[in-house]
Length: 565
Image 1: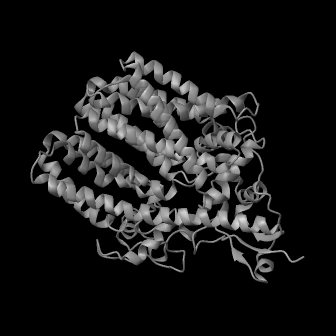
Image 2 (image 1 turned 180 degrees about the horizontal axis):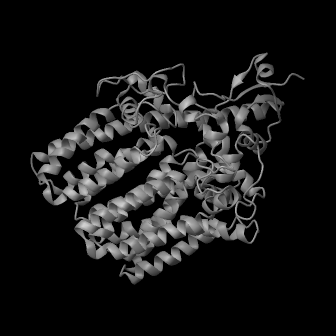
Image 3 (image 1 turned 90 degrees about the vertical axis):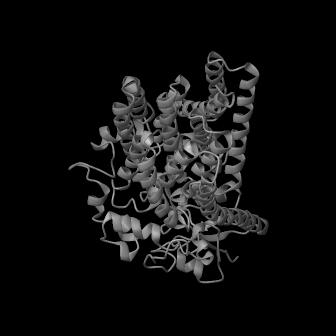
C-alpha cells in the first residue's frame, strides 16, 4: 500500500472526529442543561487526536507519521479559525437567522429540552425547526473565541476533510499522485463552496459532507477499510444534520450504491447495509434529535415546517404562497417545468434575476458569457450560471463524454450509470432545484467522467484533451472563486474601516438593520458602538450611508447616519 494513502485518510478521519465529537459534547451539555460550551472545541480536539492515534497505530501507521497527521490537522483547524475570523458573514440568511440561532443557544436557549421558543418572530420557524450541526459547532466556537464569525470555521474544516478523502479514494484506485491531486482540486472547486465558505449558509457545507460520503463509498467498495467506513458514517451523520435535503440526498445516494453492489459486489452488501443503518439511526436519533425527533414530537412531522400535518400545516399552506416561486424565481421561469428551469439556470448569462433590477433569465450560447457579467458572482447564492460562466459548455461536453465512456469502457458502465443516476434523481426531487445552491452536487456531473478518464487514460495524445477539459473546468471555477472572494475581501475590509470610523467619532448612530436585528446588534455591541434602531424614512431624511452588509441590489441593505446632538 502506498505510504501516502493512510496519511490522507488519517487526516480526514481526525478532522471528522473533531466535528462529530464537538457535536456530541454540545448535545451532552444541552441534555444536562448546563452551558459548558467554551471547553467543547479543545476537548473535542484532544478526544479526536486520541481516537485517531488509536486507529492509526492499530492499522500500522508509524508513530512519527501520525505526528505529521496531527500537525497537519492542527494547522487546518488553526487556519480555519483565522480564515473565519477575517471574513464577515454577508449572506442574507446568515445575518437573518443563522447567526441569531447561534446567539440564542449561547444565551440560554436549549434546543433539546425546550425546543419550542420565541425569538424575533420573523425567524422563529427556521431557528427552532431546521437542522443544527453547524449551529452547535458555532455555539461552541462563539463561547470559546467570543466572536460569532469563528463558527464559520466548520466550513473550512469540512472542506479539507473532503479534499483529503477525495484524494484518498483516487489513490485507492491506483490513480497517480498528480492525477489524484488534479481530481481533488477540481472536485473541491465547486463554486457553491466558494460562494458560501465565508458565510453561515450551509449548501456548500452540505456538498462537502455529501462529497465525503461519495468518496468513502468508492473507496470502501473498492478496498474495504474500517477507518474509511467510520469516515463514511460520520459524513452521513453530519450530512443529514446540515439540511433537511441532506437526508433526502443521502437516501438517493445510498440506494443507488446498494443497487450497484447487488449487481457488482454482492459480498459487500451486508456490511454496506449495516454501515448505512448505523449512520442513519445515529444521525437521526442522536445527532439529529433536534430537529427530527423534536419536530415529530412537537409538530407531528420530522420535516416541519417544510412539511406538516392537519394540526400543524406546512409553511406553504400557512402563508398561502411558495416564497421561492414568488420572490426568488426569474419571471420567465415561473410556471415552467423542471427541465426548462434547469436549462434556463445553466444556459443563461451570469445574473441574479429577479434581483438587482433584473426580471428574466437571459439565454446565451455556451462559452460566450462576457467578463462584464462576472460581477454577479459577488453574491453568495447566484441564480443564473451559478456553476461558472462556461458550465453550460462543460455540460454539453460531459454528455458527449458520458456516451462515449459508456460505449467504450464496458467494465465501468455500472459505475458511470449508477453515479449519474444518483445525481440526476436528486435534481428532480423538487421543482426549485434549478437553483444550484439547493443541489450543489450538480458540479459532480462533469467530474465523474473526468475521474474515469484520469483513471483509465494512458500516456499519449489522449492526455492532452483530457488536460484541456480539466483546465477548462479549473478556469471556469476560478472565475467564480476570484470574483467572489475579491468582493468578500474588499467588503470585510470596508466594514472594519466603517466600524473603526464610527467608533472614533464616539457618536450615536441612527441605524436601520431590518431583518438583521440580532446579528447587527451583536456586531455593534461588541465594538462599543452606540446606536438607535430607526425607521428607514428617518435614516434617509438626511445624509446617510450604506453599511457593508449585503451585495448591491439585494434587499435589506443596512443604512445609518450620525445622530445630531
